[in-house]
Amino acid sequence: MESNTSEPFLVVNDVVKSFTVGKRSLVDRIMRRKPQTFNAVDHVSLSANRGETLAVVGESGSGKTTLGRLIVGLEKPDSGEVLVGGKKVRYVRQNPEGRGRLQMVFQDPSSSLDPYMTVEECVAESIVKNPLKRHEIRQRVIEALMLTGLDSSFLKKKTRELSGGQKQRVAIARAIISDPELIVLDEPTSALDVSIQAQILNLLVELQKLKRFTYVLITHDVKVARYMADSVAVMYLGRFVEYGAAKHVLSQPLHPYTQALFDAVPKVGSNLQVYLEGEVPSFLKVPKGCRYVTRCRFAMEICKTRYPEQKYVKNRGVWCYLYSDHVV
Ligand SMILES: Nc1ncnc2c1ncn2[C@@H]1O[C@H](COP(=O)(O)OP(=O)(O)OP(=O)(O)O)[C@@H](O)[C@H]1O
Ligand code: SF4
Ligand SMILES: [Mg+2]
Image 1 (cartoon, rainbow, N blue to C red):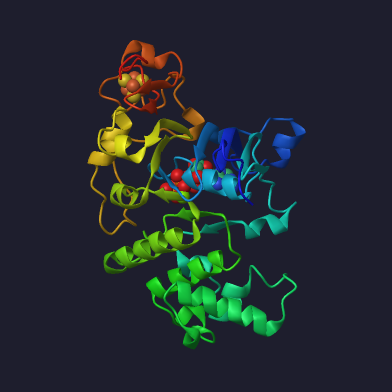
Image 2 (cartoon, helix red, strand yellow):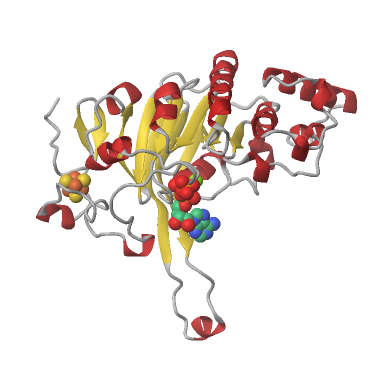
């Protein structure tokens, strides 16, 4: 389905997703104590054009995966909406057929693929409900595998027999077999050996050129964002702090958090998560004003009062009291 040409292909409109902390005990229920909740995604809006890549970057726990799951309909927003091609994305349990056009590739192929299934079963999974004959399904599986650089000799292999890179190719084949329009790539290379990462990124770029996929790329790795992204959103504790074209945000980050994140060196041997100075506050103790205030070296009194409005500075949105709109 083509989107209306004047509208971006992907639109996320003021989306909120809350989670409940822990389970409520019987005593809590009897005492009618309200469960503790927090917004893992808190009033987030974004858009992306068809065939482009939007990268969402941020530290662990900032809400990136939750945002990705909301975009493909694996989570139901508390409020706000997601539109793809002008059509509202529905929660997947209510609309399983929606999964075809919206796909997600997960971080660790070893846990996202069933180790006891064959490659053929795994890749065919998202089209088995289609009215296709068995040989047609097999043909589609082979085509999807070929597009990811694998051949029919892999069909009968169990996924546990494959290398990390091969598993991620199978996960990508499974995502593309239903001819999706949009794919959320959740840290697609961070579980892979460094030597394999570039191959998988190249594959994703080639597939995008060929099929005009729209990607939402979740990554903590600025190099990956630099390689693939057209636009970049930087997320901290459920909110965007900076958002704009990759060429602007990556070459001249303005928000103090973006600057710290881009300067941070990924720590080897720790799943390549980035570590910045200071602790990320718990979602249950989110600062009242700017969420970065507890770690920011530029923090001022005003930063503690309320969350900064979005300012348009040097061609991007930035949420920080250091800036005002008129700076071009
Ligand atoms: N189903 C859930 N129930 C309760 N809390 C959840 C649920 N899913 C995520 N969370 C919490 O929401 C917050 C955001 O999680 P999310 O996985 O979206 O972050 P992330 O940025 O993807 O982190 P990472 O880089 O570690 O993958 C975290 O505090 C997480 O523990
Ligand atoms: S609003 Fe204040 S605390 Fe937040 S990033 Fe800007 S200067 Fe730092
Ligand atoms: Mg995640």
